[in-house]
Image (tube, rainbow, N blue to C red):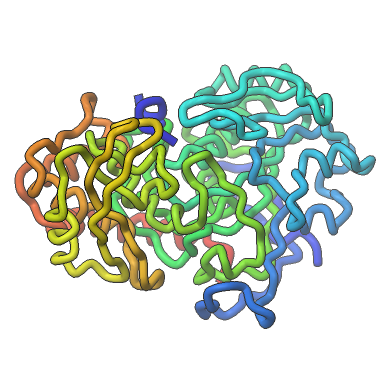
Amino acid sequence: MALSRRVLVGGLAATGAVTGAAAPARAAMGDPPAQAKPRARGAGPGARPVRTGFDRLRADGYRLLDGQKVGIVTNPTGVTPDVRHIVDVLHADDRVRLTAVFGPEHGFRGTAQAGGSQGRYDDPATGLPVYDTYDKSGRELAGIFAESGVDTLVFDIQDVGARFYTYIWTLYDCMVAAVLAGKRFVVLDRPNPVTGRAATGPVLDKKYASFVGREPISQAHGMTALELALLFNGEFVPQAAGRPVELATVAMTGWRRADFFDATGLPWVPPSPNMPTPDTALVYSGTCLFEGTNLSEGRGTTRPFELLGADGIDARWAAAAGELGLPGVHFREAYFAPTFSKFQGRTVGGVQLHVHDRAAFDPVRTGIGLLVTAKRIWSGFAWLPGHGIDHLTGSATVRTMIDAGAGTDEVVDHWQEELRRFRRLRRRYLRYA
């Protein structure tokens, strides 16, 4: 997902309809909380496999969708454990009346690059009408839902845990539009691939709201799509649409907050073209900040967001970053030639991040440290025009502090009080131990 186009970018575990602005979602048939002990890298023979919300919905015979004309908001990550797409599975099942598909950024089948979508078309595999939700919201999106004729909208997309990853705002926009169109809404949960241990980073100032951040949540939110849907419906949807959406959710089983993606036993499908592995997701909430600068964030390489650089940078940057003593990560002097995006076809110098301790690694602090050191060692450093960095960080504070010579700790300390407030709010909506 690129800044240039985004900014200016068992049974049912937790089901229930929300009917009042302050009414909490009701939980039914929930699983008892598990102990939040870190699971070893790799699922291993002793690990419990994670069952996604879709897996549990299917095992329950799709009772939650009984008698409904169903539309689904999904993308290539909406797969079963044997990597069949859930649209194909639902279309072939007589127990479900699937009548429409809604594609987010990059499209339903995932053919579009950053800042693109597939438009309106009929899916060749199923014949179902596919509607484009990308960069649409409010009455416009509500009109699309009304045109589709569905009764219930289902959301099932793999998120990566960062505020500026647009799928969570597709979720939010669809919830608001569902209220305006009088539609019911169901969220099927999937893991946060970088754990749900904690929220970190600055909280969005509403003056900087955009499609890379509609509402005031932290830069790395540490929540699942289900938990975000509950938060949105309890705090933000009523303000935007006049009341909460009629919401039902289907939780996972087997997932614990300390689990990284490789502990889940689930297949990784790239959620977007430049999110090839869970390792990319691990660093993304920090290094995506380089989309707001004139440095390459590694697009057009095999390690996007792990490789950062620009023409004229040399070994001094890796050395300066290493001197910060940031936990859990090493920095290697690196040279690369992007095949597209910034510096296409030119060899540039920079760093590669090597995360050696995932539990200790703080991606947002690391991203700030890399911005601070890049500006200090490279005379060519610049923010991109339009101050898109402010939309990514959620305010002008990070940019102005770095420009004024602030160090990493000083910048990070500045957002701690707002982060504490968000963490208190967030706790009310967490549904996994």
